[in-house]
Length: 480
Image 1 (cartoon, rainbow, N blue to C red):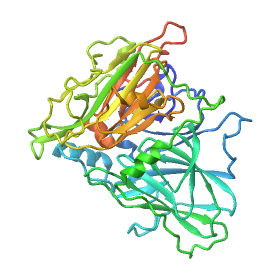
Image 2: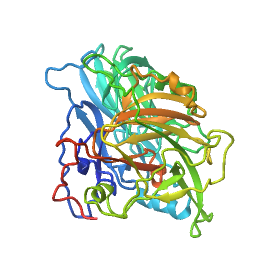
Image 3: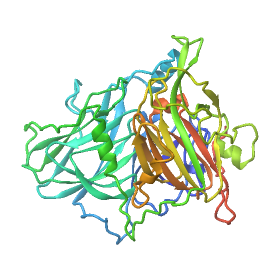
């Protein structure tokens, strides 16, 4: 077991970040490890989860960092706050399901249910109707801290009859905007204000998968209840109208509305000068596997490199200068350019496997364009960078055009976050300043794809200052 504190920057202290074989080796059965870290200069909704294999399916929870005492929210003070954790549930042991999928070389079984705060709601054919309910009072405003803890599904979320005002994502304040539905990818958080201003009654909160590629998903809706005080449980709740499961237009227009607050108190410090330009293609592939059912197994890659987990944690190998654990020659761009989002490509393009990462000088600025491809199929991919927030300066459908697209970047108030969705058959450009030394994981937050190798890491070198280098490891760091 390891635990990742998703979105906590862990400045100089990757030892507390938690991804197995990246910053630490796993805590062995019966042993313990103390995660010791500071939370500095951050406030808002983040979360924690297991970060080894599929264990985060059920090992997760919210982190709520309050503003400093006396500092108000930059939006109306809510009467009360609720955490809403969206999850996925399998009837079987998830480790068995993952192992079975790997042995067959096929995607494992999809989840049996979605959940809201661990409960699927009354629409599922369970003998007991386990349902989360929250009680509200007429005229009051509530803050919902919503977290997508699902393993593999981007999710819509809405409340019957009520509007949601988005005020924060990934612990960064946004310019408020009102919507009937939010879209939230695995790993992301979204804070919304809800005003209890409708006819007093019972209303369903509902969540269901968004998938605009030809891939089978668990499309069952989980529900919870938004209940006005004094209304009896016999009143039937009304359902929200969620977008169609493949509503690409909604997804693109929703994400376009997300903008940083960018005020003197909460500035958007976007890097305007770029020291290093990176272009990573996202691909799926099949490699031969004599022991698998079809004789092949699925792989996923960045720039045609499918990442192999080391046996020694990368941060330990870096800090103690252990040779032979990783290479720092991850390609800055694909070795072969092609029509990334054209007709479906079944050719493998010779996917290589290895533990290859990128070395980045301290305090340099990085622009990374993530380009989806039609290798096997296009698909939306939420990417998470550990140790950092980044600015989402641009996004588009089709192939990224380095001659034309940067002119359309938003360098004034782009959304700042730690997990971003790359649209199906499209691209996303992010920028960050590499001012946090250590080894930081970057991966697709669809657990299925992470397991197939859709991941890499950045080795950010130490800076010259005394507080610009990785701190020494704790004495109880798990041995490899």
